[in-house]
View 1: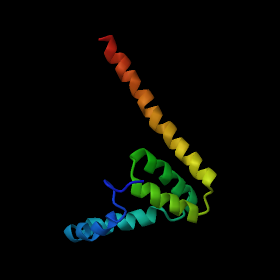
View 2 (view 1 turned 60 degrees about the vertical axis):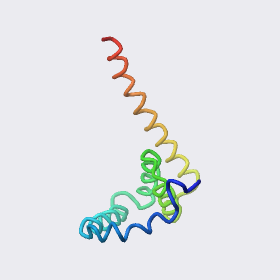
View 3 (view 1 turned 180 degrees about the vertical axis):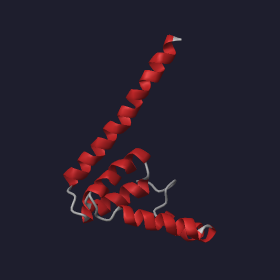
Length: 108
């Protein structure tokens, strides 16, 4: 993965964002940490969900970070691949569903 648009050291800019609005920054970071704690869903399951979501939102930082965290939580490569394919299906499904709007518009 090239790092022209997404430099690997992009997180170095977080201190400036925190400086500009510490309250929102720390609130988000706390929320983000809390969300991934085990609850009704295990951390592993939450990380697999995050892997899928990261592919749909196309965030390279999230893809990298959540795959690492999923593996740390015990996810296998096969489970990660399956989560990615679920995301692929969901993303394609959204385009497919929106074709209904196109078909309706074409009638006019």
